[in-house]
Image (cartoon, rainbow, N blue to C red; front, side):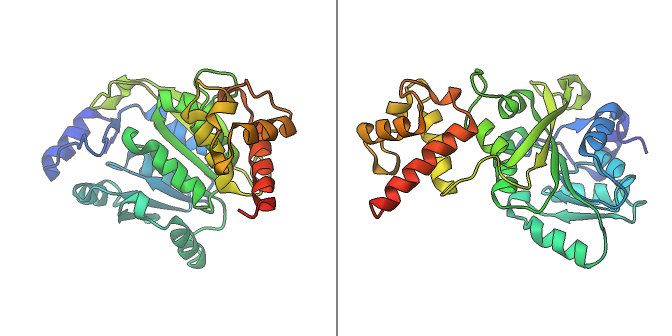
Length: 294
């Protein structure tokens, strides 16, 4: 069955009596070249474990199964489970789990598969992410310390542009710093809205996140680092002196001292800071808080 074909998608809808869910952000890919790009961009090898987020009708799942040792596909929509049994029935190395990715312990799955001898290589996470929960999914994977080597996912192009942006650019923001702290980010391919059924209102892009063995900066308190990022970008039009005031109960004068010690001009704005500069600020605040007994 050609799962890229619009007619095949419609046939499956009629046969299994299901409608595409807007609330779950279901948009199915009709261009095989996009699927090939995701698989190639993920660098899937024959001894790898692939965890797919939101397999839909299984088009990306099937392509990954051709390359990987094992594929675990996690699908929240129970109405798609019978469809996946049909479309993936010929792949003995595929397992479908009907579960919410945000409530799934991926490390437990990885350890179970490793213990069972299902794979001996890397762990690759792939998927076509629903636009409305792209950021929560990515950040949960990164913040929870999932033992994966890479995450290769499709998302709204605007979000992808923000994630891969660097300091001094308009798109650079809290999500850019947060993701790049954990990963090296590569663009795989831009994906026009015309290759989806139903067609979304915006274009998409595929990014590959190569998870760092060591984070992009050494931190004394990771929570404080992210608090500084949220504060800085929460008031991105304000200077650092104003936007960071109140962090760890420091007033403007306290923040001024921190910035002076870090060698950062207090009139700068968050969008100009590198990850290292955010880390320097957070580490100095952590030292001051420790000395103050906070």
